[in-house]
Length: 528
Ligand code: FES
Image (tube, rainbow, N blue to C red; front, side):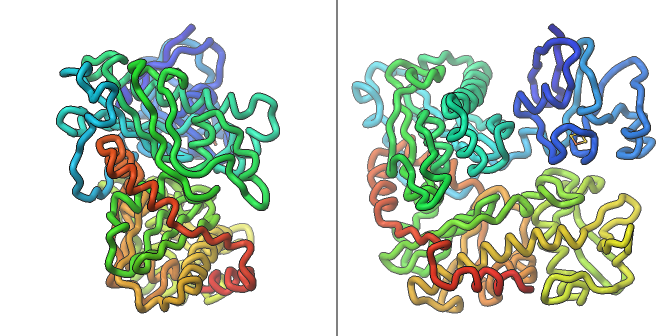
């Protein structure tokens, strides 16, 4: 066996010599790339720390500057692991960049009621974990159950990604393989085990010190965690095997926790409105909202909840991966070096990157900012077509809007179409909800944007790109990872569990595909 030490991750991976470095890293959840390891996309860059000369092929050289080559940057998918090595991951795959914190309402923590024997036997070393399982990332927070204090959060990529990027492909995998559900369950349990073990190791705890776990996740992730086949959610009428909250035994799942530890899964509403969304609604205290409020979590799926007095109405729309920087020619996740804002003045483009680092690509917020600016400058037609302009180059007969010609960063017509699909899905979902409750866009008091995507986003970009209605420019706020916040609240309070379960029962789910005229609305909403 040989050892791969990951710089900055405090972790080493062992593997057989002769394996492909990209395959080892992606199997461990540290990397994923759109070309799947075929040397085409250039998204698997790693820095190999070695005293010896590292060969560089012509294919590799095309993806790097001479300085990067000199510093040891290479494509992982073209590298065979032969001996022990040290590897630095690119910023977008470093786990410290995953947003683990979000807005959390004030509440009174009282975990003792949730512990075996009222927590009497737990004495001093009494800890719990609040977990957010996303389709892409997993976050776990260690919490002191005596004080309610959150001690540390760790994150990793969801290793189920090798079975598909989105929930639909994982449902399909579970449904079409005899052991599919079991394999996916084992995969997520392994991620949770790694995170919990690492948290315990860092804080000198043992598994027996973990007395309670709460999990917020979308409905598919909860099914897979519980080992329940999600097949029914993969086809119309999209029926989950169960709805509501779920309580599991930590030891039955194979988690490194006390034998008394229960795992509370926050309640789901439907196949596509899960515990991550009810968590967000709870964390933002929307059960008490006396204002007309729209809560939206934008990711591969956009989940939207509209609150109007006592009424909660929700829908889910397939936004696709574009707004997460995927399936975009120069797209990257929102990590240092990603272009997060774009300005066009005449024939010049200026931009800002996360952390003011050298630009590595364009993340979702940069993408929307660029689209908003291109619309303003007349570079994109209402239909989405790129227009002739000094900033638009034609390469191999195809138009490209050049964001930074020196670094070869650009947006293609295809990239703009991807954003249009996301815009069509989200905006049509919003209008369908407004219609369902009989509300006009201008009547809304508050829009809360939750999730990884919102963190670097300007209201001007959301409005200017047409993703949200123009009337909302003054009412948008960002809430961060409210899924984890909701899990934390439910870890620490029995009364709040009752609140979220009532909330989940009260949320009406609107299935967009069954609405009359929905296709026309979608197409209309794709227009800029
Ligand atoms: S994985 Fe795409 S180039 Fe290596």
